[in-house]
Image (cartoon, one colour):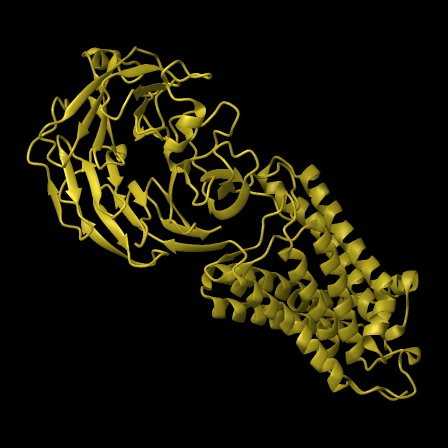
Length: 620
């Protein structure tokens, strides 16, 4: 029998893999419940993770494409149609191979000994027969194509006649089938985090699809080479597989396949250009511990660390202009950023100010009765006044009782009309009684001050290591009188209710309500209504198999878009993975704390409070 003419494998691969790539893109662009939504990260479209159904469909389609390519190499008539008829046989061998691997993994978990020296022996005892089985199952594909065998006949032919060529064929399949597939998957995972920009992102999509076609061609050629290394003489192709006249590969099939391959890239470009998906920019940063964060209207984001002011030179904070502070900040809560980008701060004994041009100065005189044992917080009132809340020790009992117990703490509110605070108005809010508590982790705030919707100052205080929060509110902006009591639901007379406390964003200090989530690390008003919030959640596990104890799922930072402060049905936008912060102390740690700020156009900036290494800007 004459050798049938060989055909190019690429048109047949494109006819299968092109529509598969388009179907995958369309499928994963659709937002499904309990699945991460698609989003654009640094200009690159990132689709929802694949599920089990999609994985099974991809495995079947990939098997079909490789089988068609093998048939094309052998010169079969209508390779794609022939491969489809052989799909039950080849797919059955693939399913048997997957089942064998699962059984081997299960046996490995059951038979692993406690003695380390015996582990490799058990692994080898299981790996050798598994390899022999998988090589024979892999040979089902070329044997079914070239010898026109199906079902058990193809399986019997694959299990007979391998002989002394087993090692050579196993190496061929490892180098040409399994190895390139693993390397391609690793390279794609790494390349996604290295590419930035819309055009490079689209180029990455196109290169990925081309590489997958080349991978399938390489695997098909490896199967043909493995078949030709079988010991006994084999037919090049069964006579029934070749028609009376072999049809040459048409240009129409090639063009159709190329168009199908380009469509996913064009669809990804349209998804990015339409700007209907959440857009993220993740930029590396080194700012030191964060004291304040704001995104004033008409300006780029402003970050204040313990030692400097960082003015971003663009909205994504790729670069920033650093201004060293000529003074030391008192507390993280003692810093406020005004609407024009200027910065007010509390130092050891007085106020300090840096204007929008970053000319800084301190007040001429110290603040009144600003003792050494105190915690302070600063806020800007709508009328321009500076509100300073102070919690100070009323005795020396704090020294005697140690860090787990405190003496009584007095709360005061200082109102200043300007930086120098020459004529301060001081209101004594009350005394917080002694309490026992745990050693704090630094996550929870101790003191915050703000102004409610009616212009009345509100102060919230949690004693160090305590679990209860004291809330005080003035009767007017002038604060002629004030009420102080423990936070409760319903609120005591004269104190703010849940609806009145929520807009103050006393995050990590006052829970917004007894019925809503307390997982939010930070919140901010959302332009147009509602709130944004950031929280750390366990990531959704992807398609994976576990042997033994199931590993912990990586945690990630998530942005919530909520209709109101209760956040009962938030819309989630996954941001980045975050490392687990382990500690012997109970509760969340300071490394879990994030700050966020919103621009009037709806974009959000998110930064870790402790030693931030990334700046994340989001257009939800």
